[in-house]
Length: 66
Image 1 (tube, helix red, strand yellow):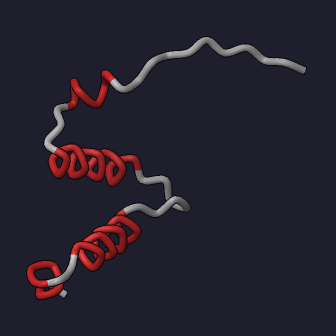
Image 2 (spheres, helix red, strand yellow):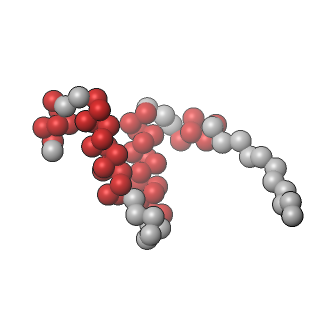
């Protein structure tokens, strides 16, 4: 599996990353720690800081309509 990461195509690398994410996160369990670790890995991979990621969030007002 490591050989594919080194010598594989970009599509193979992306597929292996996606597979690794699916093994880390389990929606049925809801483990927040693994979610935080995943965010940290993604930010590191993209070269973003936590501040840059936070800038993407814009709080919008909500209202409930019935």
